[in-house]
Length: 100
Image (tube, rainbow, N blue to C red):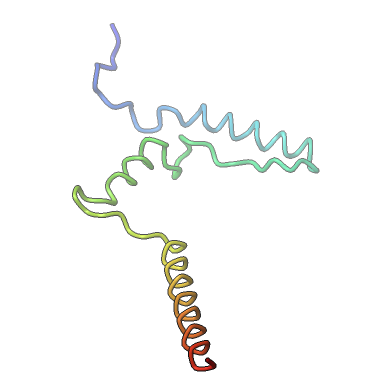
């Protein structure tokens, strides 16, 4: 019989040894091939590193239901550039009418 019941969360630190072994292999590869452009990334499961499921849960918790997503920085910059282009276009149109 298994100690881990359905729906029960795994013990804290259950995957730490495997993650430490994978991290060690990444670091060993970097030691053997120092000119490699592949960086050793922190393994999920290491102490202090969030698991992918934890990151997803945090991202889902950022927005409340019914709350509109925040506009990105690039969207605000595009809107500002459109406003400036429109103002420039209108300014040129007014100058053209003055010349006639």
